[in-house]
Image (cartoon, rainbow over all chains, first blue to last red; front, side, top):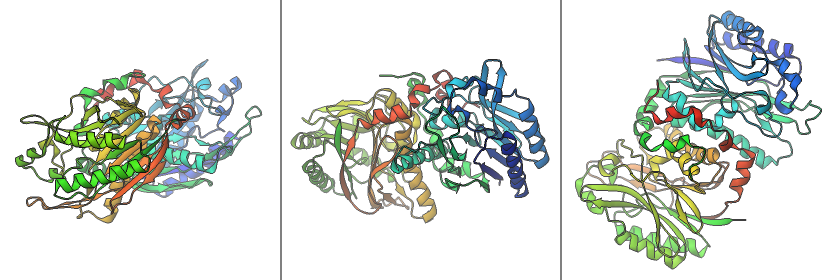
Length: 294
Length: 294
């Protein structure tokens, strides 16, 4: 039996990077005390979600990998003896930046990194201004607790990405996220959006027969002078098992840290019951590689 | 505004083909009286789900396309003035059979057919014995009410299939289905299975920004002497909008015929809000065409 304990940390970020980082350190240590083997943080967890506006000054928030942010989380991973999934604003070169997840091994080593492949650009989510799309593909990251299919936020809407991670042997799919409501939308529309977000990610568990971990930020961020909308980040962080069943599910208002056990051996059982991988029509999927096929 | 009325007919089949067909005719006429433009039937709606056992005699149930079954449903479509999605056991040649959806235009013409591409084979679902995998690909069928992305049952677990239909311009995804519970499973396991089934299909709506129609049979079928299990078909037929939101959802016990209006213009609105098709990384999806990529 291969059971691991996974911790997820859903946070309401504030302007002070120091305060965000200190609070995360506390929560990571709390997860470790509760026996977590793996801890997953939300997207761009050190800062406010600066992509609400396009401001060249915010490139100052980016850091090289490795660099100071890596050092900070490396030490925490080693201190706690946990595998840690972080989400950083990567400065690769002047004028070249990525939205990058860095995974630390339980001894503090960098196990690997993933550069966000699908970059959104919508009102209040101006990510195409900041982040060059990733160029290292969909590669699971080997760690002492399994192969982690780490992606980031907008990637979660793409079944192709989840499938490729699974075909490359990912044991778990992991999505640090920053998504929320526009308060001008009706409650019904907000509900449709949140349910769609949960549904698409649970579906990756179903289609691929592996667990999914999704960690979203929570709370209101609206402090940008040229941003008229603001975002109410909707939380709802969750862990789903390999049939898409919700194992834990955070609320939409509060900071929450949850540690839960996940049985990785269950994935193979589920894949035996529902052998989707057996029957894929790879001879007929070529049109997937087209932009549009009509 | 392009609004259409869609009728779904969830049935408990009996051994008499004549009785199944008569009852379907009644229900199709009822849908037409309620203004349906499109009616969708469940998988292999004329007979019991004979794939519970492997018996060469059951190939007698297959019919050529066009043929008697087509004539029957063609007349009904023309009489009612509706587009009709049927699911037939196709005899293509002696020893060559398919699980084929045939779509009839509202004048009774055959608008097109789809041969089930992904064929399951699990205890009590011995479909690989009966059905050769489809060889006409994932091609939406043009009708007077839109391009229909018709697939069948097991196809519903494959995001690749839904995506290709969408890339080929499908306006709606449609899944005639026959899926149910093994009564030896716990209620919790049964619930996980049904939720997984709903989730994966709703996710195709979300990923592609188009509605999904899924029609399943309902009720117990266990009359095969060499089948020790039987199947409790779980119903739960539903129609979801382009955010995966459930518009109608049948129960798991009764015959149900439901007609509801679906606004096809909403799909484009949703795709503008959440422009997933814009950002697909087709340069990095090649591994989708592999059996396994590790």
